[in-house]
Image (cartoon, rainbow, N blue to C red; front, side):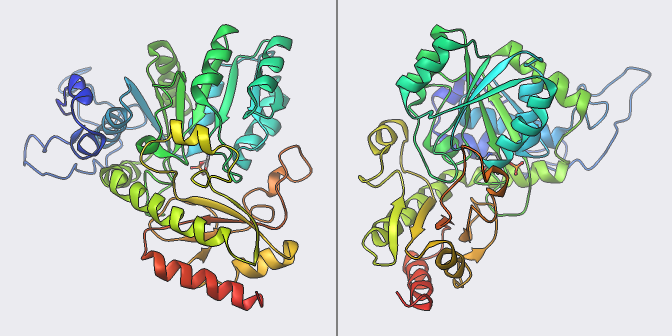
Length: 394
Ligand SMILES: *Cc1c(COP(=O)(O)O)cnc(C)c1O
């Protein structure tokens, strides 16, 4: 719809691209906000006489186009393809490019749903799945030397331990073996981390998280510079049909316009809280890539730009029971799954988001509490956490 010049993506900053790319005022009315084209089908001017290529909304919809153009520009990429969830994006990316007999290498700390999709759907379909400590280049190299992998799946910062993988190094190792690298960039968002620039072949997002940013939409996206990969993904997007609605797409558009501003505030609040937690008697260990104590801090400092994100994981003194009581005692931090919204959330991965990896190599500590730090006033958030420690008698 819009005439945002791709060449301008290199001259304008990310915040400007997020607000303007794909957002030309409506040609008929001048509406500044992209209309929600809530239509399943489009009138044809004579058989096959499509207006601007629009025929049916599973295949193509102007509101969705507006979002994918905006996202591609923010990422500085050639293609973005939108889906009805992050997992639908992951499913279509993998299913359109893998076949039975292919192998995929993943880290030992990934989103539970990604692992479930691979282990319970792709493995029975005939895809081989191996797990490695993806943060360790020597371990990755050994695995690559032993077997031929179609993909390495990188999540950095990972969920929930916020482990950091060196994307550029992993990509160079993988490419020597003809293996492609996908980065799940959901936690960092396109503001803080640029995997395609670092050598990744494709990026996936759950737009449900920071891109949507208001806990009101479930969505996903695949972003890539590889024309052939994009064609395959777009073909299966239409053939299988897990597309976002026009309203979902509009919520993604609105979220992406303020992403730059929000992510900076999320990062600033999280850094303050991580430092505060690190000195607290009720805490065994804090996992935040912005802390010098974090094993991936040096890589994160090089690889992330303008902050370390809004996610913190913390091991609470007193085991599983203390962690669950702590998570149920906050007032501003809402006890809920998901992350990346303006409001702070708290959860216990072992009992909630990561139940599907219990008993596997991906199992997480039982006393781990995960915080999605929102953009409220940081003093209020710290007061809320202090109240929860007091409820534990700490
Ligand atoms: C939430 C999430 C997903 C899955 O996305 P949905 O939108 O819930 O399908 C994938 N990866 C990461 C890192 C996530 O946090």
